[in-house]
Length: 291
Length: 192
Image 1 (tube, rainbow over the protein chains, first blue to last red):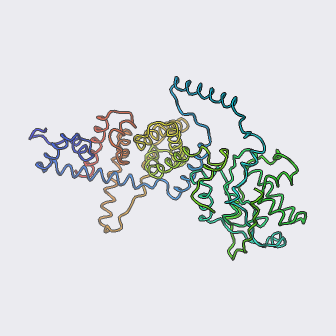
Image 2 (tube, one colour; image 1 turned 180 degrees about the vertical axis):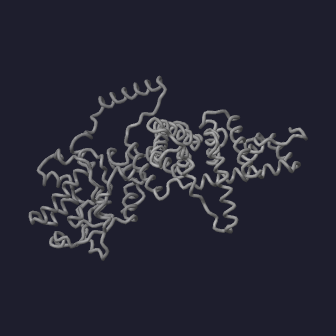
Image 3 (cartoon, rainbow over the protein chains, first blue to last red; image 1 turned 45 degrees about the horizontal axis):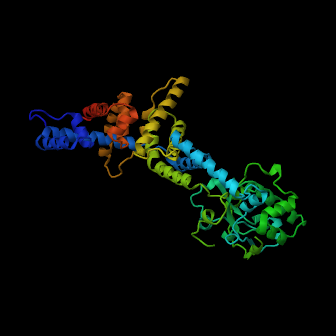
């Protein structure tokens, strides 16, 4: 309670404005403000000065035109960080118990059953392929001459198309820098910009990853344009099993050492530089039976 | 294409894309959401330490990366806004000390307060009067001790006294006293 002959302090007034008083003190302050013109005027002056200062301070535009860039920068850094292994904190005793149980279970599993050979080259090969029912492969109806003369155009992957593929594969929540939306049949071989020819290929897939496929995508168009390989065969080989195609054309059972370098997502550069004009008819390369 | 099925989660082998990424992905989204919500204010507050725009952004980015680690370790989600300002404050201090070791630091925080919103509806006389008033108030803010200025800015960012106290590592009473002192100065300059 306040003495009748005492005015409110600035601190009491500001705390009332900021909602920082207890309920009982706030009631007393409000009661006093209702009766005291001087304190009421003081409250108005403080509220006005505080508000003007806050508005002026908050009017500072802190990111300007770079706001989107800063957000993208954070997004990339977060995606990178998400790939790093993280160790949740455990209390020591429960952690030891958990580890002990895990070791026992793992030993029992190894003993009782033969574990699937997920590290074998065959298993790694299987992990690298798209789902045939979602990505059967699709190609433009273009001739070798058109393809190799450089007169054909490319069309961009639209956001709707990207969303269709991402949703179909259920990877909406996976950071986009962990994979590339890859053409199954590369556009250099007439591969169509169509959801049936696109799939999210993981950079970090063991062994047979996007980096390795990029090398095949460089080789086959050279062979086709050099008339050393039939276009239809090249398209079919890519659509059916690009890993088998890599093995066949590079004559190796595993990716060559030189092909395991950093990924170059040149698709993004190429296909966003799309030309206007009608797209050619899509010819589906339907070869799902063998996958 | 068939839609709606989580292919990676359901029918594909575990080594493929998407496996084990769910919790990291949701934390990722949560951090980006908080970035959209709080980064402008945090950037403003950190910038008021007199850091360059580049360093300010580095600090802001680092704060949100720390938030990501914080959340992934399963630590408290209570009052993340207060947490952001607390970590931002400490990071800004660290960077300023680093800069001060290289060059003698000169407070430049007020330089950022140049661009302000002009009310297009106000007449020229009113605009002139408003402008003079803002200049008077800025002069007071500029002359404040740094701790008082930090209290004032955190209040302007919408933090409660308890969060301000935690951020600046001072008592609750210290915050109330600092802000009241500042308000007295501001109202005196304002003709009150």
